[in-house]
Length: 274
Ligand code: ARG
Image 1 (cartoon, protein in one colour):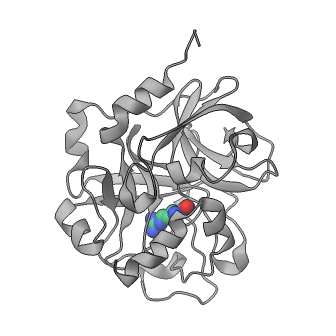
Image 2 (tube, helix red, strand yellow):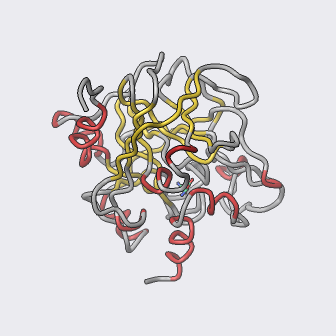
């Protein structure tokens, strides 16, 4: 395995670990102008994005541990469930995971905080670079916010190279280890399978999709994992991994939701029995 991958594998070993160990060079704010300008007190959250509103994306939620520390993103897919990354679902014990909905600003008490009654992880998942980085959490209670739509067979075109998609999250700020308090979003184009295969030797077009610019500058980053990549309100990806953040020729790698839509749907159904 190539050196460029060891680092990603490190991140893959769990969101909390990634968060704790994130002495990683990150590119940020000014990166669009100068993708090489890492380190000088810049911020990397959703890199190269802007403050976003839950009014536009009410399905964007985040996960905290029992101490209230945000460690990943997630996305409402039914009144009783969220989809997230498998590596997020496995990072914290089920009884300690909280889903925070309706809270743009982490410093407020807005919205809902729901516990988790059930965790489903994609069968055969081992780590993000091997695919299957998707999980569904069933919450205790009901969301008062509308879900994102799952892609169906008519949505294959959304995965075409160049489709402009929106990634959302409360991911980390590089500078001094503080976090982004606000929900942020960025626009990133879908990258072709052949191009992403060149960028990452572990890329698998069945289970993953890449988005970003060849020159870098705009991307998801640590802490955004599990969060949504949407086109309109249709969920096409889940933040999974990347080599650093916003680097040239290292687009963000997302779980290809269309491949898992039936599984997610089955898990997302509110169950009357059982
Ligand atoms: N694995 C990271 C996390 O746990 C997400 C990394 C996404 N990186 C990227 N360059 N798009 O938050």
